[in-house]
Image (cartoon, rainbow over all chains, first blue to last red; front, side, top):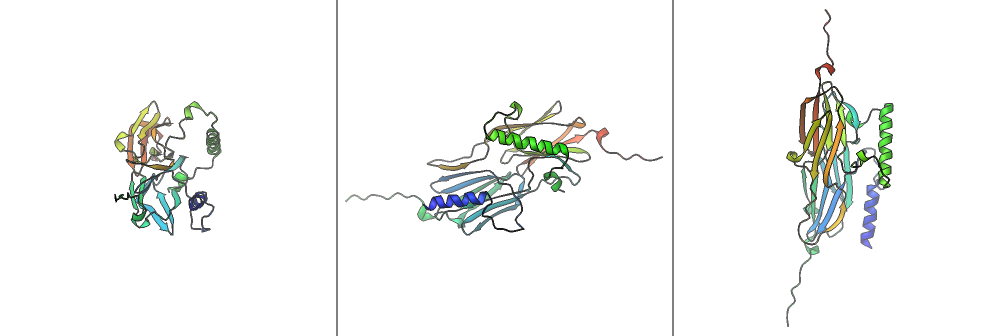
Length: 135
Length: 149
C-alpha cells in the first residue's frame, strides 16, 4: 500500500503537477535515468551532459531528492544558433525516497556529464542471515 | 549569449523544421515507420549547432563516454559522430531494475556541413559529456573589412 502511494507521488512530480508555484522555478528538461537496487541500496545514473560539477545541485528536502544542473557550453560570445535540439539550459528531476534508505550517506559522483548517485539502505534494512541454532 | 544557442530563431524555415521534428517524434512514438535515414533518432545524441564569424560549432550531448572512443570523421562535407555507450554495471547478486531510460549501445549522428566550411581545420573537444566540434569557415566566407583608399 505504502509503495503504490509513493510511486504515484513520484509520477506527479515528474509531470510537474505538484511542483510549488514559484516564479523563480525555471523551465527545465527531465534527464533520463537508470535506477537499480541491490541488497545494499539503490544506484541512480542520470544523464546530465554539459553540467559542470560546480553547477550541479543534489538536495534533499524531507524525503524528496532533487537533482538539478545548469547546462553551460562555454559557447563563443558571437555565436548565433542555427539549430538547437537541447533548448532548455537546465536539467531537473525529483524522486521520493522510501524510509529504509539512508539519506545521510548518499554519495554523488559526476564524471563526463554522467551523474552516479548511491543511496545506501539503513543498516537495519539490509538483509542478514539468521544462524539457526541446533538444539 | 548562451541563450542564443538554446532558443531557436523564429524564422519560417526554423518553424517548419521544428514542426517536422515534432511530427516525426510523435509518429515514431506510435510505432509508425519513419524515414529510413532518421530511424536512429531515439538513440542518437541531440545536437546544437551554432555559427560564429569564423567557424561552425557543433555540440553533441553524449554523456558518460571515454573521449578516446568517440569517432569523429568528416567526409565529403558530412560530419559524422559515432561512439558506444556501455551498459551500466549492475554488479553481482540479485539486482532489481526500476528504470532503464538511458540509451545504451552504439550511436551515430551525421550532419551535413555548409559549403563554406574548411574541413581541413577541425577541432574536437569533449568536456562534461558534451562533444564540441569546431569547423573553421573558409577565408573567403569570413567577414572582412575593406580599407577605403
